Amino acid sequence: VMPGGKRIKLLKTLLTSACERNCYYCPFRAGRNFKRATFKPEEMAKAFSELNRRNVAEGFFLSSGIIAGGVKTQDKLIDTAEILRRKFNYRGYLHLKIMPGSERDQLLHAMTLSDRISINLEAPNQQRLTHLAPKKMFFEELLQPLKWAAEIKKTLPPPRSGKWPSLVTQFVVGAVGESDVEILQTTAYLTKELGLQRAYFSAFHPVHDTPLEN
Image (cartoon, rainbow, N blue to C red; front, side, top):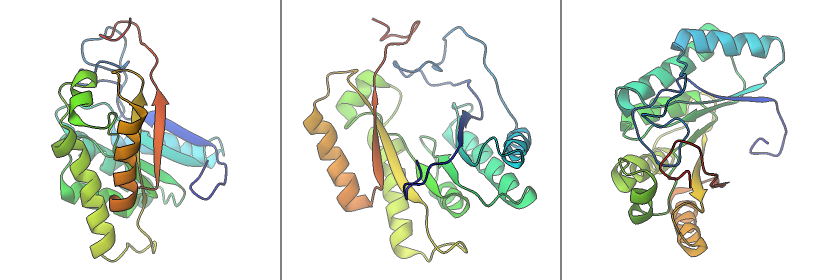
């Protein structure tokens, strides 16, 4: 469902299912034994462009596992979007994921290419995040890019499309004992202070061969 309520056929996928992080809830966490897949930016852009041409997918939501750090992974996501917009002349809906630890200039570049960006907080605060994804830093890696996005939207003129992308996040709910009040307090702050468009609440489901499988 698009921000305005329209329904489209959306391809939601990862640039790579390999990841160096060990988030306790995640099926793609480091060390889990399953076959991984990785696309190069040109391959992914070409694959989606073909699906779009055949009317199989109208919109694109691109995320990724993290390899060689958030900055390098973000570069590859941006490269994919650049190729799709410039080489394949795609003008449709594009949602780009922002990787933990991405730099401000990368965020700005991603915002000029996309209709929506998202940085998943996963937990409402650092205390809960430590039990969910121990190698992620709540303020420095996750909340800071959301603050940068809000600042950019307030202080810089929008790109040639005429508007900045909407901003969303996601919480994993029910894994580490967080309360509804904790989640709603954080969501209220993001909405009022940072202009968050939407928060997604993803119910936790245990995944085999992860620390939270039981």
